Each structure stands twice: as C-alpha cells, then as structure tokens.
Length: 118
Image (cartoon, helix red, strand yellow):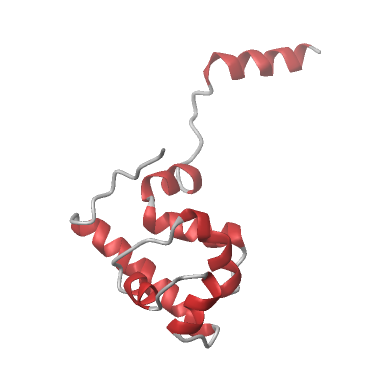
C-alpha cells in the first residue's frame, strides 16, 4: 500500500494542510453548505471531521474523492489535482509543473528514427 512520506509535524506539511483546509472551506461556503450538511453529503460520520480538515488537521481519504468533488461542485479531476498540490506536492510538481526532460533516451530516439525512415 502507498504511504505518503509527509510527516504532520513538519511545518511545511502543516502549512500545506492549512492551505488545503482553507480551499475546502471556500468551496463549502460557495455551495452555501454548513459543515453538518457537507458531512452528510460525503458520508462522514461526524461533522467535526469537516472542521478538522478545514483547519488542516487531516486529509480526505482518496477513496472518497469523488463524493467530495460532487458535494463541492468540482470536477473530480480538478478536485484531485488541487488536493494533490497540498497533499503530495512532489508528485504534483512532477506531473504538472516540471518541463519535459530534454534527453529523451535511446528508446524514444530509436522510435523517432524508425518513424522518419518509414
């Protein structure tokens, strides 16, 4: 099973979680939902879970991303991409910010050469 190497005690992780919480609260408020209403929509047993997330003291379980996206009126891919920026910034950076590598390696170069000779 995948485990994230981020440690909650790390100040940078705390700041990212706090920013994620602010983003989630902003989405909830735009939908004019109370914490209790959102908890009901996403199947959270306790509305206090919403409060914990909004203050940066937790993470949304990945298995629940679709429910959260629907409840907050956000396309699932956009929702996950934004959460990834806060929850897994290294992967986010690789997928969405890093420019492609200039050295494409021998397999790519061979494929390009073969397509030119065809």
